[in-house]
Image 1 (cartoon, rainbow, N blue to C red):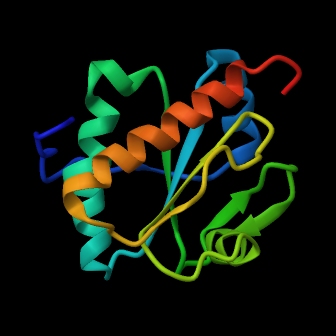
Image 2: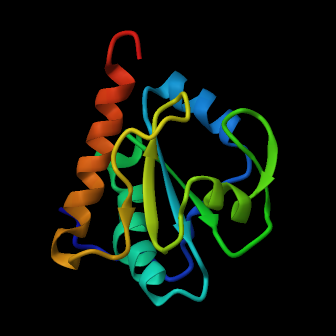
Length: 146
């Protein structure tokens, strides 16, 4: 489990093209973890700072998952997994994301690979939930005939 926190200036990469990200995920054999967040959400800040940013920079996980952020309260342009133009807000709504933070792991076909992690669950186990979701994504990516 990770115990380090990330530098204050570190950020997650904002999602802009999920079709391209999925193509890259396929070539790397690593799933996508999309963090649905809001800048004004204090729980999102904790999830980002204490869990996702350290995970993103940890050599053990760096090449096993790609983490992208979607701000559910913004109309930031986004290309979805099918290549359609949408926004962060509309994409989150299309998946039924209503609470933040919500973390969803996707395979290279844009399918959910594990149940969403909604809210900042028991913080003692939050990292474990994230790692289990990533492992489920890795298993889905390796499964024959996905």
